[in-house]
Amino acid sequence: MSESLGWCVEAVRAAAEPSLSRALQALRGRHTRRAGGPARFRERGGLGPLLELVGPERPRRVLELALSVLGNCCTEPGCRRQARSLGGVPRLVSILAVPNVPEGVAGRAARALANLALEAPGAREVLEAGAAPLLISLASSCTSPTPLLNSARALRILCPSPTPQTPPPPSLPLPHRALAVSTLSSRLSLLSPCHPCCPLLLRSLRALVAPPCPGVVAEGATPALEVLVNLGRGPEESRGAALAVLAALSAQGRLRPKLGELGVVEVVVEAVRRQFESGGSLPPQFESGVRALCLLCREAVNRARVRRCGGLGALLGILREPRAGRWHRRALLALAAFAWDPLALGRLGRAGLVPLLARGLRGEGRGGEGLWGEGMEMEMEEEEEEGEEEEAASVDWPRERRGRALLGALGAAAAAPFGLGLLRHGLSAAGTPRARAAAAAATALLAR
Image (cartoon, rainbow, N blue to C red; front, side, top):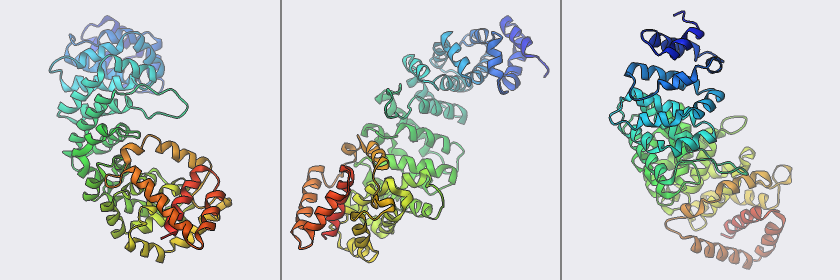
């Protein structure tokens, strides 16, 4: 095809066949795929006439081509701004709202909406136009992969993770978020772990259940729990996202017993072990595995699984690993949950827990910061834990009982001949309030 960009723009303006289809094919296949192509198309005034072709009254072939070109153009910020100002969002939403709209048309409209939502003003406009329930409906009913993946991507973009010190971005309302998780989980549950759609569906689910995640949202993932566990031990391209989803779901106390029953403890312990062997910085898979492992230690039924599959050694390895400084506090509190498990305490004692904790209380970590890290890493971890506790509370040990038991353990430590001095040293020398909490947990373990 040799149609120039100028000829294509004029053919789109004229909107007459057969030139129109030729121009749209050239724009889709060449001009808007090249680097800088969308901006050149916009600068020649082609975006307005292109949007005039986006309507349910157009022939299906023309509409599909126009939507593909529009999706390509909306990868460029200037095109996104102009398309929104020309009413592109309501046009696309009206196409999704047409009953029995062909999947090829709906999938291309979902892709264009996803690109328009890449910036906060666009996401707000897409949500206000009522696109969310239409995208969820498309993800639920479509029979081919492309519309499913385009709608899942749009839902992911419409549920961005909040960042500290910035206004909260526009995001899916809670009922739509819960329905989106339920829909995508149901679709994922029907796929084999090697299906090419799995990595992208997992990426969308990871965004939708990212902390802080209300229980009503997380419980929508129940249909996919078994598949998620299998993906956590499956192909590399799916493993990281599956572990991130499992870590987010592990923050739900009501889901943890079921997750343990399905084998998630073994999956996360293996993930943590695997990353200890790597050099350099620890990857996100390690962080997801550690977070899930520490949360799973909150229930007795899962602690037994942790003990049986070698998870105690993994927790000690986290405390010994300088690269895992930001996770030392979580690992320490997870170990404190084993304070009434004689079998676990015996294994921990033989593995060197007491000298390790004593070194930590004396502040013998690298740079004199202690073995469970202080400063910025601790503050970052605390920010991640905010809003998690209510949903993450143990189902077999309510928070108020936990607090009384910890105080009782500290009292027993203080009553011991050596305990008062150790408590005074650990709780005063550890530094920050967060580090003192970690020292208190360590002392409870030493008192056993």
